[in-house]
Amino acid sequence: MGPPRTTSTARRALAAAWLGLYLGVSTAHLSSLAWLLFVPRGLRERLAARIVLRPFARYSLAFAGLRTRLVGREHLPADSRGHLYVANHESALDIPLVLRHVERPFVMKQSLAKTPIGWGALYAGSVTVDRRRASSRARSREQAIRTAARYASLIVFSEGTFGHADGRLGAPQLGLLRDAHAAGLAVVPLGHAGTRRALDGDRPPFRRGVEAVLVARPAVRPADFADAEVFARACWSAVVEAVREARAAVGPGWPYAADPGAEWA
Image (cartoon, rainbow, N blue to C red; front, side, top):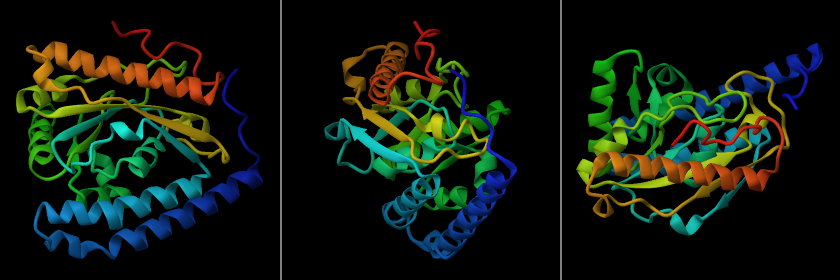
């Protein structure tokens, strides 16, 4: 079964108006919080998680009409720093979905910094990366490790872009996970399903009324692994298992035709 058919012209116009309203609300909200840039690091990230990331996630999901459910809440650490949260990526709605339940900054592509959520994410300590440049990727990895260790744990979408059309996960970028092992940062594996049914990648229209499920699994700790490569692969294998559990919770159908770990060994 493929994705739902494209909406009519009238519904597209309504969706565009709805999106314009959403962007207006986002811009007004996040532009009013520029004073956060003058708050000392550490305190800034904690404040921004509450007054930037939390409301952004909630009204974004409300605008999209996406219902969410968290499985494994007990696996989410209480500490605000010292971890990486690693998740799969299938839709632009992944960001508000994960932020709704894990109020932490994230590693984001550089172009996102030009959008309202990008501004707010920078307040909270998010790290930008230009994936086309090796120097930017290296700098971003260093900054991400430093931020997670000193100021605020980070959310990472290790595929770097949306997964395959048939539901297979993309090849993960494991460099940051290897760095986490060296830095002694634990990794919390996250897997989700359902967001792509609401928004296919980043291309409208939205399909409202969809449920997305986020699964958190126990943290993978560097002390349990002598080798950084084995640690990194164990982290991603746990993400794959969490995705399988999330897909079982939302039920079969498009776009989950293939096993998420079909290309992962």
